[in-house]
Amino acid sequence: MTQTDDKLLWQPSPERVASSPLAEFASRYGPYAGQTSFDYDTLHRWSIEQPESFWKSVWEFGGVIGEPGDTVFEPSADMRTARFFPDATLNFAENLLRRSDSGEAIIALGEDGRCRRVSWEELNNEAAAFSTWLDEVGLQAGDRVVAVLPNIAETISVMLGTTALGGVFASASPDFGEQGLLDRFAQVEPKILVACDGYQYNGKTV
Image (tube, rainbow, N blue to C red; front, top):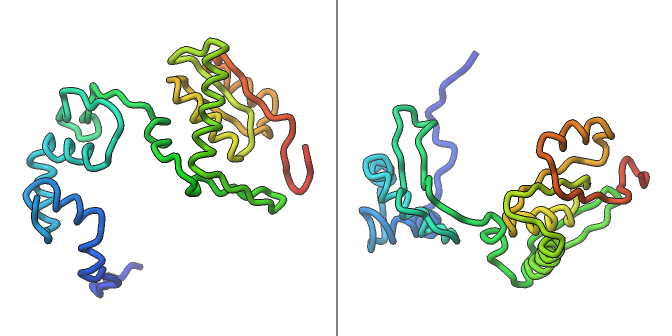
């Protein structure tokens, strides 16, 4: 049994709306550019009536690092098969690592309760170090790197270092077992395997 209740549970204050990223976007692009207030329905209508203009503005507002290409939107009879920025080129790692300051990028809490905090600067350095090694051993864009690593901060550095060079990254937990790892990784035909020499599980070092 369900019951419909029209009572409004929560509504942001005008101050909160005015300071939101959506309000900032509306003040810079589209029908409300240069204005301090906006109407959501009008913004939504702009997004569906002028999708090329809207999504180009989203790319610019988001500060995406890359080349958007000449085509912004390819419509389709089925929205699920519509294509956005089909000619765009960008690097996932480059966009994630745009920060390089002392702010916290990762807070990793181990099973043993130990906490490791990794700054953006440290994450950049660790990813760059792994990228340098991959380059030295001949990794090319499109090559696959697989990792048998637990859910730790170093795994993220390996992933970012791989994608920074255009490599394809896949990983699995060490507890997959030999056959599970073979089944998973054989599909991608990896060039490089990265593995840990131990990990914590259920209070024990394995």
